[in-house]
Image (cartoon, rainbow, N blue to C red; front, top):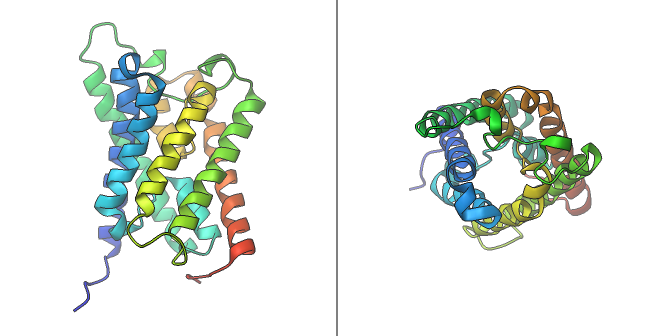
Length: 236
C-alpha cells in the first residue's frame, strides 16, 4: 500500500522547517563561530544543513528551502507555478524566524551588534573582500544558475539513483560558498538574504535588492534552459 500524498499543510510545514534549519545552521555558523571555523567551516555548514534537511523532509515538500529554487524548478516544469507563492512566502517567513532566533542567541554575548554584519550579504564596501556591484551581480547570477542545474539534473528521473540527489546538492552548495563567500558572503537564496538583513539594518537592507533579483534571474535562466535543452516535462 502506497503512502498518502502529503497535504499542502504538510508540504509547507516541511519547507518552513527546512528553510529555518538552513538559515539557522548556515548563518549561525557564520555569526557564532565564523572566526574559528573560517570560510571552509561556514561553507560546510550551509552544505551540510541543506543535505540533512533534504534527506529529512525533501520527500514531503521537494526540499526547496529557497525561493530561487522554487522558481527555477517551476521554470523547468518540475514544479507547479500555482504552488510557488505559498512556498516562497513560507520560506521567507522561516528565514526571518531563524534570523530572529539567531539574533537572540548572538545577543547573549557582550559586544554583539547585528549592524556589524550578522551574516548579511553585500557588495562594494559591504563585500567581504570589497568586490564591485558588477562582480557580485555576476557571481550571484551564475552560481545560482549552476546550483539550479545541479538540482534539476540530480532530481531528473534519468539522473542519479533515487535518494542520492541531496548529497550532490549539498556538495554543490558547499562549493558555491567556497567560491563566493569572499565576494558577497554568498546568497544564492533570497530568503537567506532577507532574514539576516532585516536585523542588520542600514545598508544590508539597501543592498538587498541584488540578493533577491540576481538569484531569481539565475534560477530562471537555468530552469528554462534545462527544460529547453534536456526536456523531460513532468508537471503541467
